[in-house]
Image 1 (cartoon, one colour):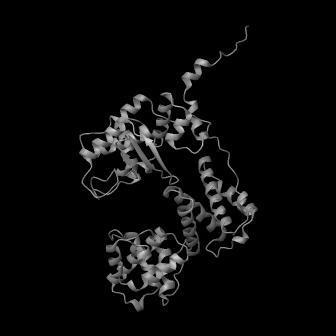
Image 2: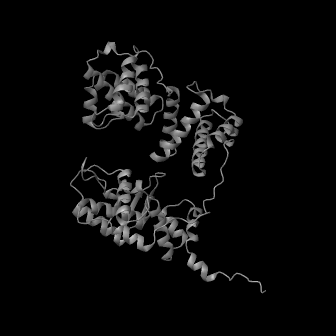
Image 3: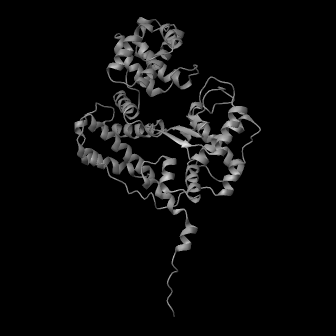
Length: 416
């Protein structure tokens, strides 16, 4: 039933007044019965609702709906769509959602595969994405590139389908990975092979390939400790934090976000997801809902960070029902901020401060280095940065070059 997925009465009422309202209950039951995640079902329902509104606006009789209308909606309407939220406009999602709708409606011919795409592959990728989200708990950004490389692999091997996974052999997988790596940088090769290995493990989990196929993905050399981490020095930090106009609401917000990044080493997705309830003023702690693996951590809240947050919440944050700490101030005023807005605010501050830097993650490295220089142990730094292994934290042991110089032995010289 629709009510098992959509909980807001206003949304349920809106959908029940759609042109295709008779199909939504069966459509929901079908997707849930096939094991689709709740969030995916919601997206698909939104796509069908969008299509339904389009049909009604075009005054197309329900009994006259055919695959030609679906093609027109995807090819002609979606690329220039100006329909308001919550209209789902992501073309692969809409395509997959309407393909499922065809099976419910019965009188519509199967949706032909659009040029350069494959419905069979998109359906397989949707199932993989459900697994990454609901079982592996991966973030949106990680799932994005894993879907991308899995899609490339399936297209290269099976073209547009069908997908005969029993034909996958270790030699085929190795040859594909080596060929795909041509022209890529070492970091991109590592991402590609990791994504390919992840998808093949998913197939192994579903008993569609054996372990030898997964093991055939080449492992790229990883010299993660070969270079020093990029960091800002104290003067650059001062320049950055001084680049915000704290006399404006937006400046107060951006300054508070920068302090979260510099003082706590938070990721941009964690800053964007920060909720008012996550701040415990009485005990000076902050709860972080980790965007990388959905863990929850409680961190100490430094005084400077707490002051920046309090000043923004009291003087800069607009009145809104949103529970996010950081919200938009102009268009869509009061809505929670996105990761791209956090990055944009910091990059603009870089430019105003005269720093020739674009990387945001450098602030996380800076937070770790500052803690190390202040005398914190590697275990304490790992706890704040929420590293699963101390090996990830040992990178920062190399930044104390002045300390190493004090204990280094002189280079032996040969007397002539």
